[in-house]
Amino acid sequence: MKVTKICCIGAGYVGGPTMAVIAKKNPNIKVTIVDINQARIDAWNDSDVSKLPIYEPGLADIVEETRGKNLFFSTEIDKAIDESEMIFISVNTPTKTYGKGKGMAADLKYVELCARNIAEVAKTDKIVVEKSTLPVRTAQAIKSILDNTGSDVNFEILSNPEFLAEGTAIQDLLNPDRVLIGGESEDAIESLASIYGSWVSQAQILRTNVWSSELSKLTANAFLAQRISSINAISELCEKTEANVNEVAKAIGMDSRIGSKFLKSSVGFGGSCFQKDILNLVYIARSYNLQAVADYWEQVIILNDHQKRRFADNLISTLYNTVSGKKIGFLGWAFKKDTNDTRESAAIYVADHLLNEQANIAVYDPKVSNEKMQSDLNYLNTRAEDENSKLMHATESPYDALKDAHAVAIMTEWDEFKTYDWKRIYTEMKKPAFIFDGRNILNKSEMEKIGFEYSSIGQ
Image (cartoon, rainbow, N blue to C red; front, side, top):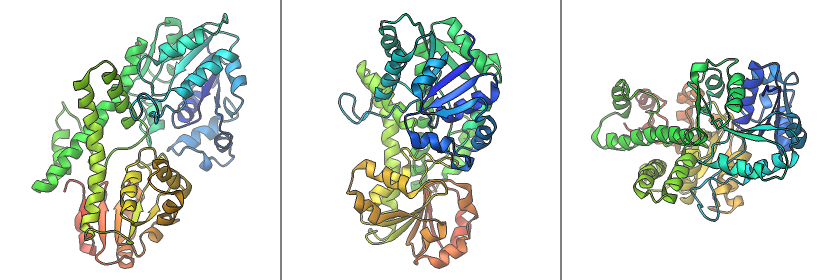
């Protein structure tokens, strides 16, 4: 099938950047991104591209270049489904918070709603592409829904998982390590392969069966998260033995069998994928009664939770075992630099832990709003919303966040944090002035020379 019109359901962190790059590299294909969230679509259509709902370096330039030409954002979902030959499903698949599989299994209600919507609207044959991170065998469920609509429409289902790292998503899309396409229909696979082939070499486009494609995504994220938890486990040992985790990471990273990526010790990994995908893997393993496999992967999550708790506990114990009524300045709320995504950010859980101890927290993040921070905290349902807003707030500048603070907690590795006037910050803080560097981005000796009591991960 020659594809001339693409519809993507879901205008989020995956759908937006992916479709923007596809539109840029395929000017003859009309790409329409649809979403039920009117405010989000309005933000995508804002004439000021600095106000796009997703912050990703390089994204605004591509949207500005393609929007209105062959890239469109709309809430007219049925119309886009009807017109397109290929439909990407790129909706949220959060971990279930209810019922069977609560806390581990992926919640597929949005995916199922998409499938039923496609089945109801479609009048011509469609290629339906799983783009959301989904558990193994989801394609089979989608196909079952689509094939039992009672219509004569033929649906081909493909799995095309994303392997994007937030903060570098555009570069990851423009120069991918590989593109994975899983499916049963060779024609459908080649239709999608030809779209990617406009800028990706065929050698990097892997064709597999659906199940291999789906499982590859979960496994890749599990392996990466495992590396982070592994180096974080060593970081605690380093602190007890006077070893330096950065030196250890550099030494083992130079081993060609291991490599240096994802060996950066920190307060813990966050983001939408790692925890969700590992929990999904654990749930699948347990469903097949593979308890040893499930326990192994679950330990990666347990260690990550321990790292966040350990960071907060160290801050409390260093501040003379109480933070009640003390101002703690947070630098960063996003789960990593160069993104405004806060899902599963370590900052949320460290803040929650400190608020349980009645700390007052002021947060500065260059890309995250106070509204989003409050929403993240309220989602935990630990305390009343008015108490959260009373104890924690965002500031317009880092200096406001740190003025009169007893301690600084660096939660995100934004590059700009290194360039601040740390002498001024020291002067305006309570004494002794403590820095808890959860990302190891500052120079210990320089901070101590200024006068700070400096604490970092694994040193």
